[in-house]
Image (tube, rainbow, N blue to C red; front, side, top):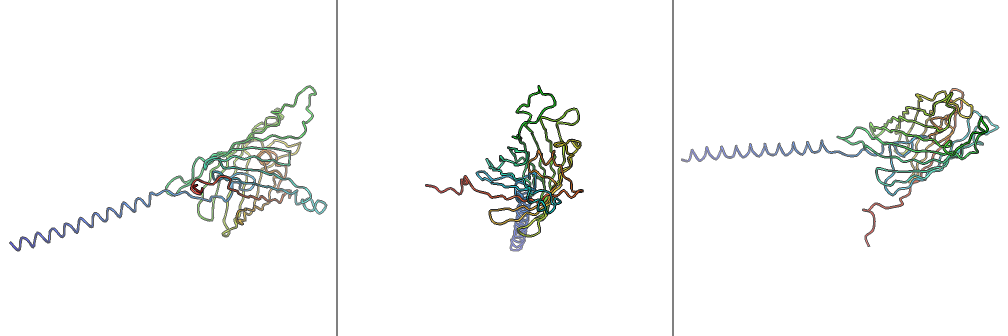
Length: 308
């Protein structure tokens, strides 16, 4: 009888040990699977909503306003008589606002062409670990020039308000490959209401590529290039137009982000950047410029509001 009890005890202990080990292993495996499957947002693919001239996939948070000042000096090769371009300058002042975490809007005024613009950007996908491999946003907007009406070839022709309008749409596709490297593709289409349709196309289709390489905690090198697939033969005020190529540095200082850059695009709006860049790097037509961004919280998130 004692032998039977001893055998039963040994068997029971072995079974309990085996069950406990299997159960523990299963629980650990489940926890490991949950950790691997956890989705987390990948943030700060780019530091601001603009790369240099063009937009990024980044959006403002709900209730956040961004005041942006863009400045482009004249061509460096203008020489000492124009102090290497500093005597000639173009400025854009804009206000952007985050309505929700998925939607932001903005307005701006560009001195060049006396152009007013407005846009909306919708965030469609957010890059995540164990989730979406990319961030995806859609940008749509329009601009109107307020310069004096041109003299039309036929004196009886009317210059309508709609002739001043331009529309632009961009799909912004970005991926943050590491803490130091982010890349972006920007398929774009620009539509001008008024062109000489016997020679040129109303639509300019371009493929943009841009990137950001982080050099230090607060400094990053940036670049962007827009290659026009159509509209290469379009003229701007009788001048040949070129693809826009820009390089720069982002410098973070508290609530400010300074963007210093060189570019062959004299204007900051999509209309000028995509369709009216009349300068080229091959001739030394380079513009030094900068963007300044200052962010304000207009409406605090609910979790930060004080309860009365």
